[in-house]
Image (cartoon, rainbow over all chains, first blue to last red; front, side):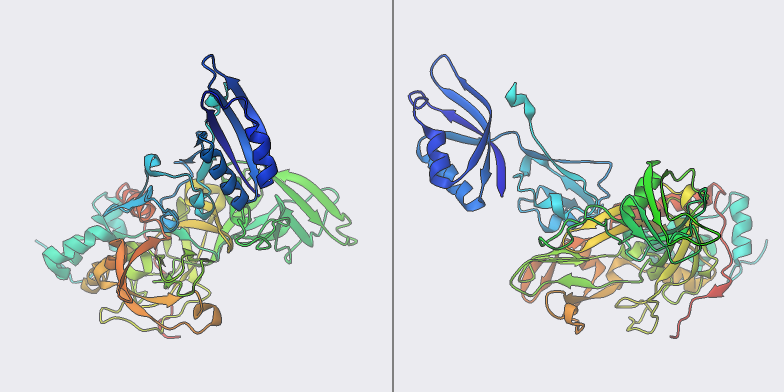
Length: 141
Length: 390
């Protein structure tokens, strides 16, 4: 089971299309709408949690993009609990983007959030449980 | 003017510590001091070299006495926050091992398991002042009729809590790669396929036993930094093995000696005793250890001057060889190479990954240095030395 919070921006003219129902039927996904708005100029914004088989999930995202919708991760990011992190460096084995890297010669373990792709591999690899997934709930207001 | 002596005693060093005159340096500072002044002069000038290490050390745990209840119980099974402790001791004594996993943990049923909570985490929670639930069961006896006790405990309320680690502070350790085609999850961390990373686990030139390769200055009774307080070496660790390959400088080139350590848990600091979860492997605990090395003579000055360039270790395949118990060295590397971030291995550049915190090791060596400089920490005479021959 794979799950992510996604924001969809519908261009003008798309808000009348049954996009979500097609997404669900075609790719066997489930969803939970957190927010849906149609703006005065008829563009739409929808924030929802999409869940299902990872492969189907990715196919579904491709389908949404093919319709001309803008698909974005919602403020899902990785945060490091500086108190818990004891600067060993085990996380650098799995970090794909170099967001987690070691400053030499001090051997300090640096977390550069700007480089982080939120792949979450470090969350389970961290010995101290210092890496956490965060959501920007602000977008729901 | 008095003649400079060639050697000094621990007693003499302690006198200087009490007078606030002792010269204390960290093991990394000693490298340059001996390089510049030579071991003879350094031995005259320097009294103590402090070392440090902070790393997962699985062979650790705590002896806890949780006090008698009314009516009494001869506890035969005990769980602390759902983590089973060894209760095969007297009525209300247990040993809580760091790697014991929570009773409901799914383990590796969905591989790799997360192992989120275990003995190490319970010890860390106790140190953080948290309330821990205790369940004890028994078969009941004439003198201890109770068959079940449920209560909550805090570290403060426990009659007795002693950290006693059967094997810590390994003198050197393997370096791990994975030569198979899929990612593996080990006590040396995550190892990607085709030797895509190489993991190592000592603090190199700061590591306690690498600074005293033949255990000339320490043994049973040596006072040390343990978990943020003063603890003791109480003997050789459970895999103490001095008879290994050594470089010309005497430093082992593979895992060798280790220490059994003890210290009062009630005096410790949660910062230096931390429960850890190793993906796909299990629970463990990271322990901060720092050993003061008295510079008794020129030889000890030379030993403590060891630098990362001069400490070698072996790269082993944890994918196939090691699990089969047939690991043989694929390559010898120095800690200077490992700490550079990249090594050459089988014709390719491979990134290196530390499992041991050099930053925290440095902090420990500096804390121990300041304790000695302030006269808060005196050296102790070992009562029995560690074996160099079995």
